[in-house]
Length: 126
Image 1: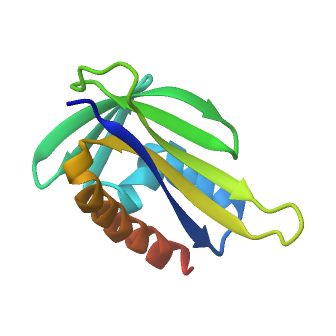
Image 2 (image 1 turned 45 degrees about the horizontal axis):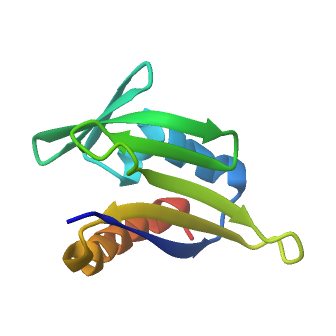
Image 3 (image 1 turned 120 degrees about the vertical axis):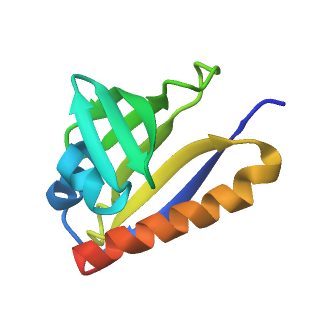
């Protein structure tokens, strides 16, 4: 079965510069996304409870977004993306996460993102 794309939006109280660092660097991602993060070139190795998974950073735009593709995912069209959305009028900032999952796994995947972004909010004091 093909994976489905989904998006989740999280309002955050921080600057785009501070947030982008947490989304694009090993040190920043290590604070909230995984137990340990190592980078070699464009390959990020994420570790959770001793299990490693690798993703390639396939695209990024300074202070706007980062996009990764899991190396063990057979579907080349899937990715996960962290996008920073700044409302021009209010100045409000939101993190928009785009990811892919099997249809029956989307709700569980969203709950996992909720947990991880709660940790990000805690670190940012948001």
